[in-house]
Image (cartoon, rainbow, N blue to C red):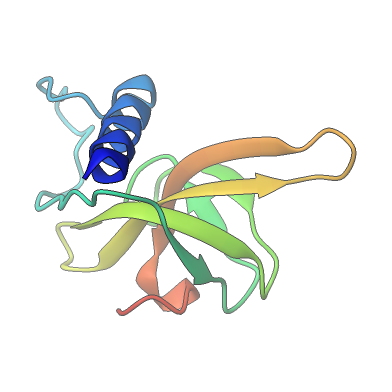
Length: 114
């Protein structure tokens, strides 16, 4: 039980530090609703060179681009206004000085259910 509580706390802390706190969004900031929380980060594999975006819409800015076969970890998902499923992911890349980014990836770009 203690590990589950620690994982839940880590996920909540990550959500708060990445701007996912439950605060009202400005008009146009929230492309959809229906976020679902997870207790831990779940691994999935990218199917192609796919963008990770700032929000869960194809029009959002890209924060990083994956390579086919990369591992990303998702914590929760959301459907946008077009009813497309997106996963909130953590992605670490780079040699020597790895960089970790957080953002949204379309479900069709990963092995997680779409």
